[in-house]
Image (cartoon, rainbow, N blue to C red; front, side, top):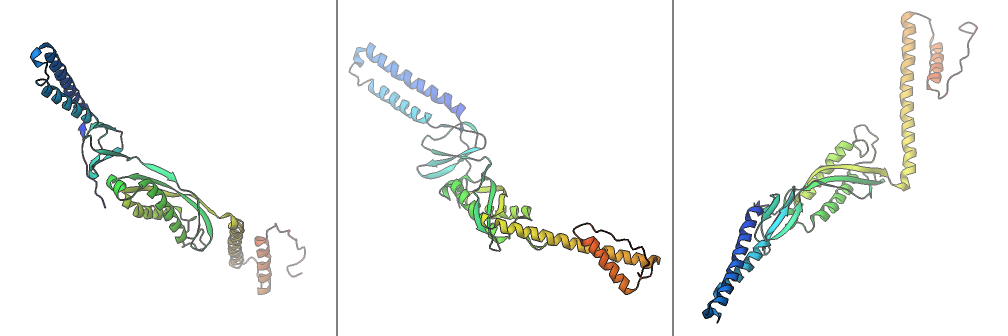
Length: 300
């Protein structure tokens, strides 16, 4: 993997006056030499004035080339410096800078970025088709890896993120039938941490740091959404019925225990069975029970 080398460029505001003074000096030398050639007839042949004019012209050209070395960097922005294909270093100093004008300067943003992946259709751990998407927050940390270890680091981030989301969906079921089983819908925080870890492992080659990854869309595919909704409703009904029966049995046991404890009434096994049946019907029924008052004795 490529290693980033930090380079501090020269302050552009300190370099600018020097180059301007050099240009003025070269221009003044040229003008003065031409003036001497016009005034002094012995210099009219030009062979005496040629060296100064040639030197001033070359100096002007060099100074003009040096003026091309100025560049600016915004906060959280870097410039990868290349000299004839060779990596020289990375400049991160914000503001007005100057470096070798032959450097090729590739600017890379170091700011935090985020993107919402496209919704993809995959099969979960149980083979059910689901639609899933995620939001990924990332930034470039190693500019050398981002430039030289991958072809296009932004495209690399998008493609690898989609691959990680597909792999994550196949590792978990959409919904769990067991309280101890992790699922995409029931363990969103844990799933997000797993996704972030896998993305970091995939994107570290491009010098990218994943700051956060979280599912933004999760649903059954349209072709099975209706069937899964009925299944969830049935599971909810069964769970509710189970809770109602458990509560009703507890209330019946409490009633019988209180009657025996306080000796309110003595019931044989047959009467206890009838009482348990009536209480369970009343407590577990979907509609309110209509009581019938017995105006006779207990056994009539």
